Image (cartoon, rainbow, N blue to C red; front, top):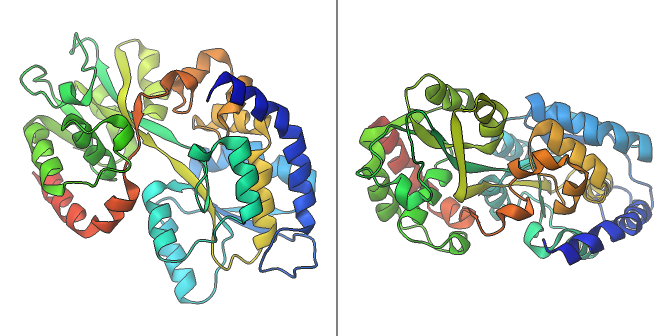
Length: 362
C-alpha cells in the first residue's frame, strides 16, 4: 500500500463505519428484507489461538456495538467437507467462514456454495482495502506466509531465493518440507523453475515439471505433517533449514537467536473471509463482514493476538513497530512474496494430490 492510499484508508474508516451501520437496513439477504439484521451469526473458524483472538478482537466488540449475537464453531480443516454436507442436506447452519485458504475458497466458489459480495458492498470494500485484497466473495484476512528459515549454526549462509533453496550442490543440508497443503511446495518449485513472483497466481501449474523439481530435493528432505512438527524438526536438528509458516518462525524460532528468516520468494498463505450461499443470517453476516473491515484498531488487536495478517494493511499503524515485520501484508514485503495459483491447483487437484502422496512417501 502506498502512503497516500494508507492515509485515505484511515481517513475513510469513520465514514465507512457509518455506512456499515446504515447497511443494517439495506443489505440484500435471505432474512426478511424489511427487518433489521438478526443473529446469532455463526462463524466457522480455525479453533485454538485463532478463535480466541477473533473472540477478543471482533466478536465481543461487534456484539457490544451492534447488539447482534455472534457464535463461533471450530472447524479446522473441515470447512469444505462440512459446508458440502450442509448444502447436501439442504440445511445450511453456518453464515461466515473465517480465513479459509484460497484453494478452499476457490473450490467452494466453483461449487456454487458461496454468496457473492453485494455490488455496493464490494465497491466500498475495494475503496477501503484496495482491489488486490478483495475477491468476488469476500476479502483476504488472517493470513501468513511460507518462508525460508535456516539454523545459522548449521547453515552459515542461508539460501536467498527458491532457486538457491533447491540447489542441492550449493546447499547440501537437510530441508524441512510441508507434508500437507501441496500448493505451497508447488509454488516454491514454480519459483525455483523461474516463474516470476508476480506471475505465480496466473501461471498454469506444470505438474510434471514442479514434481520433477521437488524430486531434486526429496533425498535431503524431512517431511513434516503438523505445524508443531515443522518447528520441532529444526529445533531437534533433524533438518537444518526449511520452509515454514511465518507465525511459527517469529513466535518460536527467531526468539532463540539461532535462526535467519528470508522473505524473498516466500509464498502468501492467504486467508479469505466469505459468506455461505443460503446463510441463515445473510443480512447480519454481511454487516459483520463490513464491520470487521472498517475497524482498524480491532484488526490490529487481532493481528497481535493471533500473529496473522489483518484485513486492511492500514491497521498496521496500530501494531507496535517492532512487530510489523512479521506480517505478510507489511509494506516492507511488497514484491517479495508469491501468490499461489489456487484456481489451477483446484482444477488439477486429483493429479496433484496423487503425485504429492507419491512424493511424500519417498
